[in-house]
Image: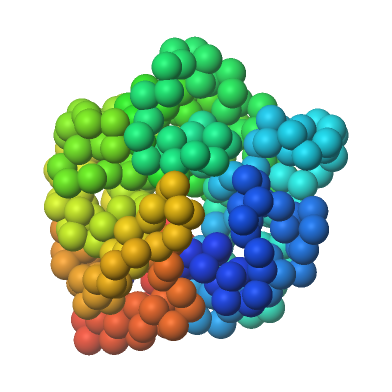
Length: 302
């Protein structure tokens, strides 16, 4: 494998560093309406750090969530499209190739109560598919390069998302949130990753929004089971207290892990919550050094 493609880091922590209030149930998606310039600035910070893929601010953007603040479906669809345009504008600040990945978060993100870290919402695969399909269609219509089906806690939701993206015309990556060697809902990683093996549209499978140590194990399992490139972008290692809505503990994210991830099959690497532009810049330096040491050309997005 020639090198790796560098994703960005956590959008929310960069927005907070810029002084944004993310206490609303819509989280960073609220700024699509109230502060789009802040979102573009956050994307630009990651572009400057060396990111080759920008993930949009649509993780918590849903028709149902926007409806709760009085936003109609047509206007909500426009906000989905705006999330892609903001990332495109930030990507246009440099001449190198940058992909825009439209974030499709789990059903639990819409509930804003930590459910995305548990899964098993009591909904059927068909019901979850009906929830996801309209937002997938709205995001795909905005013209991103790829859809990021991310922070998925549950095999049932992964199946629903893979059904929802059928016919969207875009490649996708499928990324689970895990704890230890299980999905957040308690299913085996081998079973979870195998779900993607028969889907040609899935360009990578892996994990995000998890402890870095759990990512180490998951990368190996994903590569062995799915037979696809692996995507990996864990959190800083701090722990999210959903009830208190705050982070606790010390960061454990070591950029030096990237080489082991690559050796195990990772193709797309980066960071999630609390991993900022400084760490992404460090990852960029490590990837550049590895590429130069191997005498290979620079990585390009897949």
